[in-house]
Length: 545
Image 1 (cartoon, rainbow, N blue to C red):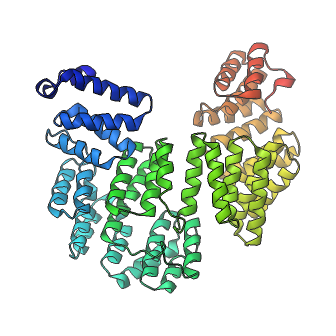
Image 2 (cartoon, rainbow, N blue to C red):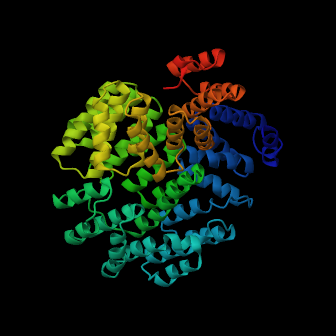
Image 3 (cartoon, rainbow, N blue to C red):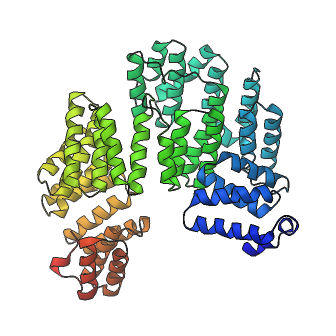
């Protein structure tokens, strides 16, 4: 790559090629050291001197997206466009820049290029429709063109609703919203929130409450409480063309994230934020995209932009804490939560976050105390059974890990009573007892039920295999454990279980191979136990818990 850069015509004809090459190497070294901001700054300076260098522009584009430098990303794309080297997603950036500046002709040109590059051509009816709406035109006919494309149809309903709201056709959106509300799909929660905020801004609290009547997500419950209390600042928010178009990109970002297309997810999130401007949902989406790419420092900054009055505040706080913990900034996480609890001491969600952070630090006893506070507040506030079941599960898990038993068992049983068909709860309830070799009949029954409900879960399949091992059905155990390992080949617990089962049936070489695989990812007592098994073989005192 360095040789290609040094031999490029642009470097030969402009400036000091040696100096440019040195900067390029410095940028690559910064990237390898994860100093992404430094690398982006070097690429930005280099691109000023060598605007027609394809390799440099391409690296600058990737670097700019990685650090959220939208302006540098646009400059990189425009440099590549001059040479016809544009990737399929790239025209979306100059489109967003043009839309934000109300440069309708520039936006039109970007749409034409997007169509020519094929991959994201399904977006054309939506982009064109929002251009028309921003110009004060009726976009109904243009939106109907999305029916011709399978991918576009997936986003059509929500885009129709948002377009009607942005076009001040509130009454014609009500029928579409009614069906959407009754279906109560989790995926549509952000759209319900956007619609409810719109009608609240239009002084129609009754319709806003009707849209939120099921309260199926935390932000919906928060927004409903805010509307009932009459709060408007930072809550009531009309849908505009910029917000509606931005929502499309936020949707795409989330969907691409699920498909583990982290880079494209970041592209979409940054385009959406640039179009929508100051938007809590746009910042939340970009934060998630950064976190998915393990750029947790950038994610933390983005979550910090979401104000306390936003319906998404607690989601953002939870995500921020998760990113801080992922980067092992435990003190910052706890300090952040302490501050939030001082402002809102009656929020059980904050105690759940505090407990999860303490667990990540290895302090399960302190975590159990936080979860106890969450349970107490949840009872006092008459939280739904689903919410309380998760609180009890968190408490039981922390108590079990801290050795607070049988209190942990009682908490897990309470969670199961509240939510009797949860595979996660059933598996934990069964396995915790199985580890202690107590109540084995009930424990195995719970694990079997969990497996019936979610047979594709490697963790639950491992639990069932280990249950069969403990009850002496060793060959049957191996079948389940091998299936579990296919789903999670690096999991130390599954590898150790399988190694124990192999050894017991005389497959000694395979047993040691499995134990060595487990030891690669094990820590502490588990690593020491595995080392002993690899050296000495399986003895009664070395069997996996």
